[in-house]
Amino acid sequence: MALDSNSADLTNASLGSSFTDVDVVVVGAGFAGMYMLHRLRSLGYTAQVFESGTGVGGTWYWNRYPGARCDVESLEYSYSFDEKLEQEWEWTERYSGQPEILAYANHVADRFELHKDIQFETRVEAAKFDEEEKLWRITTSDERVTTCRFFVMATGCLSSAAMPEIEGIASFNGSLIHTGRWPKEGVDLKGKRVAIIGTGSSGVQAIPVIAKECEQLTVFQRTPQYTIPARNEPLTPERQSDVKSRYRNFREANFSMPQALGSETPKFNDSVYDVSDEERSARFEEAWNRGGTLFMASFNDVLVDETANTYAQDFVRAKISEIVEDPEVAQLLTPEHIIGCKRLVIDTDYFETFNRSNVDLVDVSSDPIVRINETGLATKSSQYDFDVLIFATGFDAMTGSILKVDISGRDGLRIQDKWAAGPRTYLGLTIPGFPNMFTISGPGSPSVLTNMIISIEQHVEWISDCIVSLDDRGAETIEAQVEAENSWVDHVNSKADRTLFPSCNSWYLGANVPGKTRVFMPLLGFPGYVRRCEQVVENDYEGFVIK
Image (cartoon, rainbow, N blue to C red; front, side, top):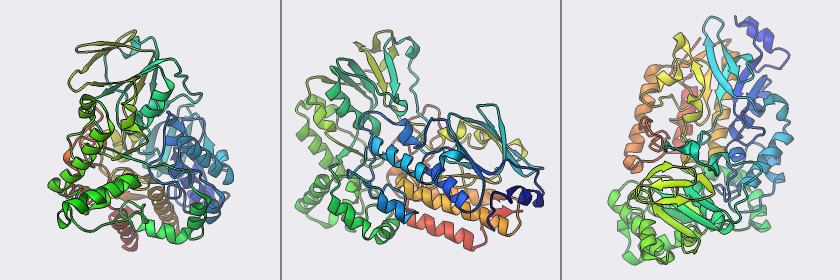
């Protein structure tokens, strides 16, 4: 039975726990934390959200860099839990930019009056499970301790900015910025010499916009990137009205897709070997012209068969050589690795930008950066001077924000020790040794391989339903079993090993963070994952110990 706010303390006492400040502490006020708070309050639970930023939005609060844009279509990258919310919000573009998504997040927070239970500019420093009292003690940066029955990490998969380890960073006299911590007030790049290190998703999005603003842009690239045109465009009133008139069916169709998105994008179940050379090229061309991340869905085997994958590789490589005018620059921008093993990026005029006279490309795989100095940086062969240095070096994905918190579970087990050899979870939701603690879109869940908001909603609803179930049976704790964790990790690995995803160094494996253990973290396949979570509940929380 759910609690109302007036009965929470009485119920805690009846369960043998001492007084708690709130039923649930949630870390992070992005889309996961906001929905977790709303869902808990609607069920009658008290909750406190701690957020290090000054506002809601999570990754869309922090990532304000020029060109920041979602790679999931706006009508899909939005909450599905409230039909009135779906109908009242108007999107303006096929793929929404950061300002619009942040405006949406603030609208949600205002609409559901979430701010009153969110403490901003507050970091969670430590969390310790009290085995005797069966509660968590949460220490925050304001030196307060908050006690709670349940502890939820809603810290996001891409929220811990990764800075490269380059000698001399502190000596640079100009402006130094990470794309994931772009200043709220913006950066005036007009007339400036700018350098950007990194050509992952944020770099690919930022480079075309920055090139138009600054006097000179030098791009330092380690690994060239496969990127597909987004074909972003204004969202017509007709398209928006059409989807809104059938939103439930539209959502249900997306829920059944492997990535929980793209149900209206053409899908093909045949192999690259089943068609002629002409038809194969025509289908890739159609996908290229349509734009978006589902380019890889053109055939059923390009992500599982390395030889089949080469056809997709060759198509994109040919496009790069067509677009980039300088053959030497085109060669530097042409990837050699498998397409799709790293997150496929979508862009607006990325390759075209390298035709501009004010853009230079430096290949640091052949001429590595040696140090940053007062006026710029030195590679092995050259010195480059500039006014602004931008790091588009990505994130310590999926685990970074969790491991920044000193979390201690049963018998003093620290999360840093538990995950020393790589992250291990059960269902991507829970971790043995850490009772009553949950992770939203954690390692071992579909998360970053899906429409994140839909995966978030599924996790939030599973967690909140679990808390209600515990109260209904008068239980104090739920904890995953090690055997269930081992089986789940094997399952995640076996799914990945049947594909080409683990074949190259990507942030899916933590390969962008020096010293991080290489483990493929997300799980492939949203519908199968949802069925498994449902089966666990139907089998009386199979794999858990409830006391």
